[in-house]
Length: 478
Ligand code: ADP
Ligand code: MG
Ligand code: ZN
Image 1: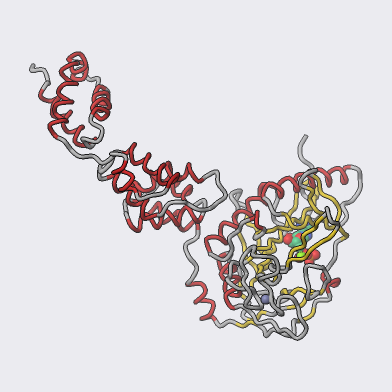
Image 2 (image 1 turned 90 degrees about the horizontal axis):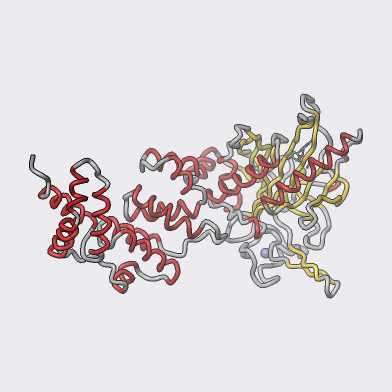
């Protein structure tokens, strides 16, 4: 059966900015902290306390806007969005309605679909409620009140669950590269509201949409969308219409449930925020912010391929996460053997961090640079270098010290090399004959045997040279 309905999705992504302080006061904006310690009269809405705007938050938002190709409004304003909720002690949120910082951007997905970004505005986060079912009470933690957020709103251009997930993860990755958000979904620093409707293929009118609030995992986003597609398809098949409403996703049940009928802007009685001046920029201000934008993932791939001569595939893997490419960059800044560092990085580092959420490599880049150099210059052999990296990961320590303690340092002993190789060759005249009859893999056999016997006493390079010489001496005369 061919598919009858097209999926239409628009996202509203909230990203917490990683500024040191909150957006309208000087309290710490750090995640966590002891309950109700990152607070002051401003972020808890005490009468008479006035907000002061955090310049870094504005710059972070503009950095994101420029990266996603937005126009930056030279004159931007804040508005009060009024509503009561126990985690919002002011009973209003300072946000931006009709003059946001950034308008009209876009981001391309791997499907080739270019998703338009309607706007990016700056606003403040609310606190957090902790529901204690056992004692039947709810507690409020205001540490998160007024942590800066940007909201990125897309046009309804996304066409599948996979595209939605890719969009969210790509936004997160770019924000991390920009240094404006740590994009840790599990800590809530990226949350997405998913708007979804269906329409018959070929129709130019959108259907009524459902808004699924506050999705905070990639898997959840996909499952919620898949469930909604099923639910709305059934409605349409039964000749009914979807109703515009806000729903939430129940992760355990794998279904969405109604929360409330959709509110609209009027319900919030928005009005211009009287306590904050408008934000204005000159062209020079904007250029100064643009100058601070670091290399983005696709630009790093290009640099690795063009300047460092890595394969496109390797360059992609290293740039999959910012902390990985930062570590690689730091290493090659110390030991600029780009390919050699990449090879060891892709095997020995990647496999140890790829299944962790820590986003951290527990060894120092300078120590990694040192062990790669030790391996490349035959101070230790390659397999021992790998074992040293294992020890560095598991126990820490300096690579040279570990190498000494484990007797891995190669001390060349030329008489041992000739002794071992000559003996090996003299025991196997049959193989030497094979070799000169064109069976060149015999060479590899001798290499393997000799390296094993000479561990710690010779570099593979010297062993290779000596075997070549010894074979030549044994070449049968015509
Ligand atoms: P509101 O002001 O009610 O929040 P917006 O026009 O700002 O509505 O849209 C909010 C989000 O909903 C945007 O991401 C937009 O792309 C998306 N959206 C709007 N209409 C639809 C629709 N019919 N189907 C799916 N998504 C939609
Ligand atoms: Mg909205
Ligand atoms: Zn405060």
